[in-house]
Structure formats: structure tokens, C-alpha cells
Image 1 (tube, rainbow, N blue to C red):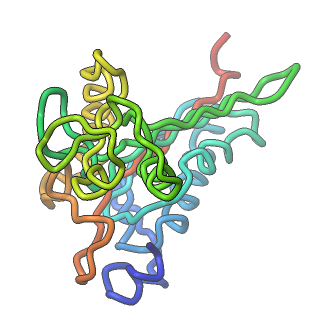
Image 2: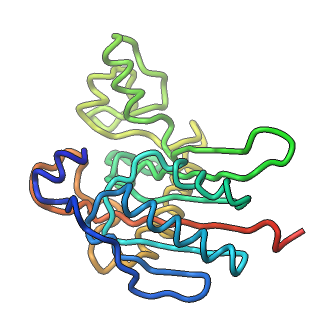
Image 3: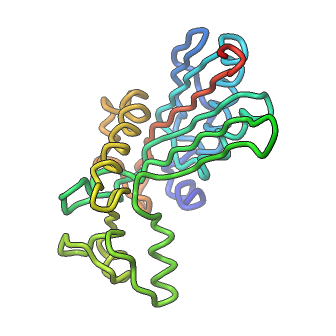
Length: 234
């Protein structure tokens, strides 16, 4: 993904994130279409420093590209004894409940919290029933999909991984209660992309460009990085 974006010109390999607005506990950052991990590490470090002074921080960034494994960033808070949360939007791969087309991303969410007497809590999930990688895995092994994982080109649920890869449309987390995964994705979209100002840039929901785009259109993703100091509470 990164090499493809750099070659196409949609991502800058040497872009430096810029703080557009900030307070003692918040910041709005422009990722300047730089590499996702560069922007992610910048934002999380900024959030950690603010939370150590104020007890809580929220940093949101626009103009981002794919930042990789979400839990990497939330886990950075652990060495400081802090709680970290990270989430963001992605290109559309999920159909809303009872819909036929993908309009929302898989909406990755991660939380990491320090634990005194055992292993730290690190939770990483998406709002889709499964990941796209799971569909590819079943396709490679010639295995059928579980019911409720994906839709086919006809807009109906399918257990055929080939049909699912053609449609590129996953179902929301929750099975028969899929509205919960759909609702969770809407929350992530609102608190990352739209909060980061991507509403004005038309880079949210179904308007986000595809993962496999070959042109120079920036990914334009929105991401949020939240840090809490439990020492400011009970």
C-alpha cells in the first residue's frame, strides 16, 4: 500500500505533520498526506505529552494515509502508565444493515490499558464481521465463508469467497444484530474523519478513495488518538 501510494504520488514520503490548532489537552493535525505511521506516531506522542500534563488528551488528524496496526499506537501509552485509544476511518468495505453496497470502512478501534499485576490490556477490533484478509485466506485455501461475513455482487449474503472478493463488501459485526457494527462504524467515522475536518474535503464514508487506487488521489483519511492518565481519577 505505501509503496504504491508513493509511486502514484498520492502519498508524500517526506511530509511532516503540522499542528493546525491546539489547546492544553487537544490538537488538530494535518498529516499533509504523509506516511500513515509517521503521522500516527507524531499524533500519539503529542497526545501522550498533553495527557501527562492535563490528565486527558485528544488529537485528531486529517490528510492521513493507512497507519497500519491500530494497536501499535494505543500501546505507546502503556510505557507511561497511561491508557491509549486509537481509531480512524478507511475506504468503504462495509455495507450498512440491510443495504447492498459498501459505504463505510472497517473502522479499526484499539484500546490499551496498563495492568498492575498481570499482562496489559490490549484490544484491537474492527466494526466488520471479519477482515478482508480473512476472505483472502479462505479464497486461497478453497474454503467457504461463514454465513454473515460478506455480500456477493447481487447484494445478497454469500459463502463464496470469489464472489465476496468481486463485491468487496463485508457485513457489519453482530450477525443478526448487525446494526450494532454499523452503528459503531458511524461513531468511528464521526469521531475521526468528520471531527478531523474531512467533511469539508469530501473524504469520508463512501467518498474515500479505494485501497487499490492507481491515481494520485490522496487517501485523505481521518484518525483520532486519545490518551487518559488514570492517576487523575480514582
